[in-house]
Amino acid sequence: MKKNYFLSLFTLLFITVSAFAQDPVINELDADTPGTDTAEFIEIKWTPNTSLTGYIVVLYNGSNDLSYYTIDLSGKSTDANGFFMIASAGLASGDDIVIPDNTLQNGADAVALYQAAAGDFPNGTAVTSTNLIDALIYDTNDQDDAGLLSGLGETVQYNEDGGGNKDNHSIQRKDDGTYAVAIPTYRAENVFGDPCVLNLTTINTTCDANTNGVDTYTTTIDFTGGNTGITYTITAKDGSSADVGSIGGDNPNSVESGTIIITGVNEVVNFTVNVKGGAGSSCDIDRSINAPTCLPAATCPAQGAVIITEIMQNPNFVGDDAGEYFEIYNTTNTPIDLKGWIIKTASTGSPVEHVIPTSLILPANGYLVLGENADINSNGGVTVDYQYDAALFLGNSTSTVTIECSQSVFDTVTYDDGATFPDPSGASMELATNKYSHTDNDNGINWATATAEIITGGDKGTPGAANSFVLSVIKNNIIEGFATYPNPVISDNFTITSNSADKKEVTIFNVLGKKVLSTTFSGTKSDINVATISSGIYILKVSEGSKMSTSKLIIK
Image (tube, rainbow, N blue to C red; front, side, top):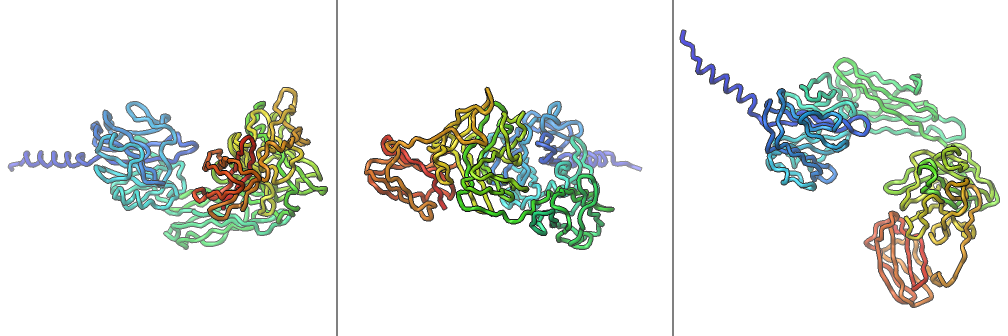
């Protein structure tokens, strides 16, 4: 029989060329890893031992759909198995490209592979599909990013936490070109087990009662992806692995989307919820539940009864966190229980708050010192009456300290990095003893740097005792008749008045100490337009020759 060897050889060559003629692809991505993301990587796959010159990888930020990092693959090649790695230093080896730890953002973001020059994609480049070879849009429990999806021609955004284990899963390409999450297979073929399609979303805790005793609380956990034929086992255990509470609500075995409800847990008990899938599921999801503080509404005295009188924001004798404190004073003749009161601090962004959960008595006409560290041996010798949560800190630049009772602000002090307040290092800021009021402590001119040592050779301050600073009032240094209204400002303008028609320089600073407005006027009265300034708390500074007045300005 005549054999057509030529046809067989042609067919073999055609199949071989076809198998390796496709473009390189993004084979695996691990953007969210344990700790501070020191094991991130992007895996490219293509024909073994093939040059990647002419290709680049571009990272896009989903917050603005602009590029934030570009990686040039020129001079690099796939290895004998067809892989090329872009990875953190702890993973990379040989010819891999090393990226700094915590480079890959956690989503919603994108990785795109282009056949283009790196210079075509400076940081801040808008998302584009021109010369695009492959793209992966991903997240960790974020909403889909329509701009990235449409801009890169994709229809699916992949969740690295889709299996409830984002720190230990990566997003991996399947043979059909779609992606799924699984245990990372760094520089190796992707291997998929059973999927985990159940997703735990919003978690809330609510006190069942608010009393002075030990109350119970209820936890609700929303879920999606149930009712798929998988049997799930749900447990709730405390730190000693003992079962807590009663588990009820919707059952993901039979309900597609619903709410798991855990009741009857004491308010002092933190616990862990585990949802484990049976046959056909790889789900093994843990969620930590922190107990709320269930307290009755605090009993509040009259406004001005409790004021902030001293702030140590930048100790030198010990580290910042170890030695920070602030002092409060009771201006009344009656002791005040601070149970249920709230402490807040803020330097940038939203304030961090702490609820005082137990009885804390502020003596009549007396002081309390609140700090992060109550150990007198490591905090610079300060007797701290109450140790607050370590998440609170006193910023060294512009920051705010606030005390609240029953959702009402009782006192707040915003110091301003030296603009009007003192800015000491190794000493506290002290309020003048003849300015002990919740309005006078708004004004930086009423504060001074402490001069008395807390301990011999240590930082300076008077924690828990009367301050050593008394303000000498020199009328010649104050703008006579100075006033502002309305304050808070509720429209585009507020008014400044004084007794003198001399020229005045008006400056407004934000809480970060940045100048946001500067203007001048002459005369005894002028309207100042603040229409371009956002709502918030500001510091107003007015100079009139050698005289100066400052005030806190609230714009609503």
